Length: 463
Image 1 (cartoon, one colour):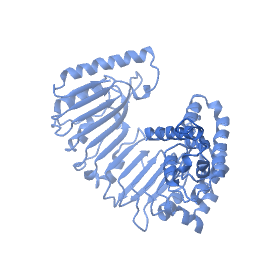
Image 2 (cartoon, rainbow, N blue to C red):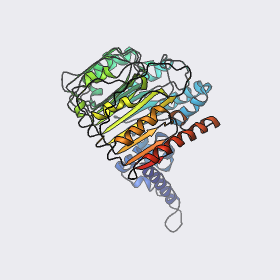
Image 3 (cartoon, rainbow, N blue to C red):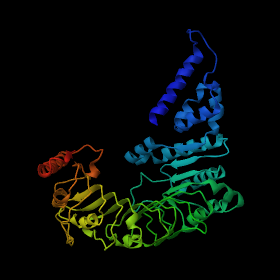
Image 4 (spheres, rainbow, N blue to C red):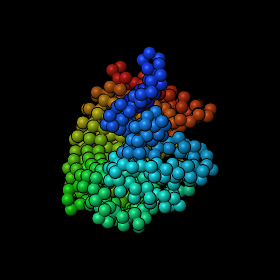
């Protein structure tokens, strides 16, 4: 897609040159870009960012006319957010810039509908008047994809989101009016991050948005209970609930649901009527065992194709459950001490006869003051019949990862490739200090020892 966008910009520049010079190098005042159809110009504009689209409008009279009718408003400011992460003192200045940018574009917009409306910046409740107007604007344009993401990247308090924007009563009242109900009918994707929103508001969207296929809620402090259901069958295919610390009860009845991602503390979880569910992520509080989610999911485990777990190694226990007969990919992100035990995962592997790929992300630390009760793993030593690919990120060469990989090498019967990345996930993109470099080299030595024990038919890659 990037190459296509670059090609479009190059074509525009070429056409602009042709406006100035004809084929024989003579002056040519024709506006070649304006000779293209509206349909073609809209397609090209749809592949450009807002900034790119605005920057090329000078090339053509018709581009200037069409620009205010663009149907995708994605106010992406990734570079500026990066600046804020490095220097929080710029927050006030950058917030003013971002708000003015969004308001200026909305004031000049003349289209009647929107395919996408996305705002993503470090904003909080003090900006609520502007955000309220943006929300109502997007709804009035019968937006299909709506994303509000107000992560305070320059905030160092914990938990984050204490000053988050909350969906005000006036906004909620608007989407309950006849006009508002009519406008939200085309919404197919709703993503709310660092937005305080209640279960009542979310259930209103679920009830009155028959085309809604994706719902994401993250860091909402007001969400206590949520019933994902409707009097008519939900079209919802993707549900993601992350870090909603006040959530106590989550009920799901969604016949078209394919992906369910839950990250947070233990809640009362009830799932029924989810015959298409194939992709699940469970993670969150390091002190909570994952069993609270496995029990409600027990009736759907046999149909899962992908299972992702994010949890602590020292609290990784699993209940007895039926075979995960269709599971192809198991991904585990584990946190723990250097002498914890990952072999508890073997019970899950034993229950997955069709498992083809195993992905591990390890966040392992060494601490003299770290103290906990060790898990006692009940290793069966059964052959692993289908596992072909193993990927490990954060290998440290400690007991926790060496023992587990040695077990896979011993019992994996059709292993084709093992990739070990000795870079700790928290080191990614950083300039490594001398001590960190020494730790990485130590990990590589242990990885090489494992490689020497692997079958010759197994490709063994160390990064």
